[in-house]
Image (cartoon, rainbow over all chains, first blue to last red; front, side, top):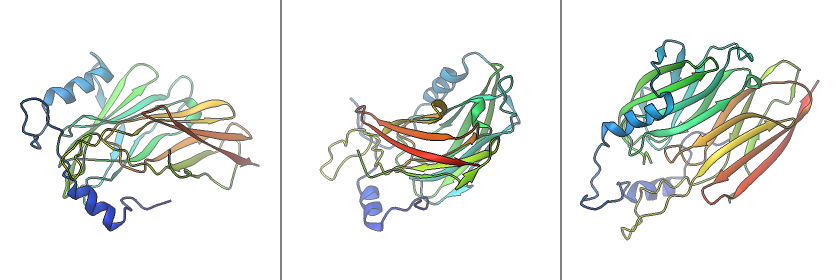
Length: 156
Length: 107
């Protein structure tokens, strides 16, 4: 298993040199601006609808300072019995200031046994990441953590 | 699509045990936001979904977006229901699928 961020130096230099800027749309100069807040709000709404998510049980493990925004490791976990009657159906992770907010969504089943998922994300700049868990009873749980990014990665 | 995916599961497991599964596949996960050295946009090309099934039942699914890092790494869990085989499938934007099957030794 490669270590996180295990690109060769040549490839990494190329990726950084390839100017990770937003593709210019009409009228835009291709500058690297933070995206509108509506994008994140809209993405969150697509997940939770009109529901009011609760806080407290969902944990985001993420480095306080990410050396390389191209590969920031994270773990989402929620202490759930994962029975048919009481389990986590899905977990989502979003970025508040990437070019696009969605990072990944995960669907779990009682067969998962544990509501815990780990992966790696791209963060374009220092920002908060937000995780949402959907429970089998229809409730949503939300959590938020700030991540400082020293070298931004193309957040997609 | 790419080179053979790597999967890590325990050597053996007991029925009822919760095991950890780690998967890794090489893929550039091109975001669609980069420009090449001539300034031309590099088109998006990512693995956008992953499914893990065990003994014929879906256990875990992931929908990946461009903000998922290159060489997507996924770690998740399963409560062992009995003997069986894992099937893992990665699908990219063009619909190309890579599958990997691994037997779990259940004692």
